[in-house]
Image 1 (spheres, rainbow, N blue to C red):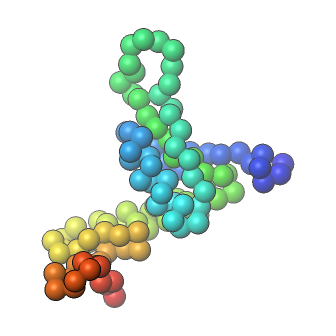
Image 2 (cartoon, helix red, strand yellow; image 1 turned 60 degrees about the vertical axis):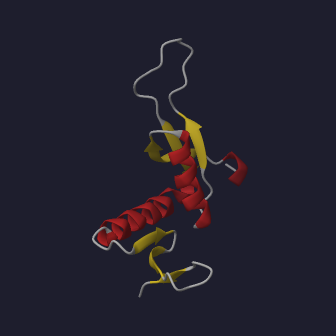
Length: 108
């Protein structure tokens, strides 16, 4: 199987397309190709309550994607007690109100 023919697998399911775009963008920022797929599509006129979107990645990159998402979730959980923290793709950061451009400063 060539790289262009590689299977794509679900890395994460999300409730809506916007959340999917956020997760896919995070993964792409970490070098993992990602797409958002509408998993709830069907031809019946009645909406399905389980409407889901999936963020898919190449099968060979699944473990890398899962590690990046797990690391982000762990950093987010650890930062919840800090009201001043802002979560970025690189992890928690603090915004210095005295910085003219409002750029967050990195923790650590």
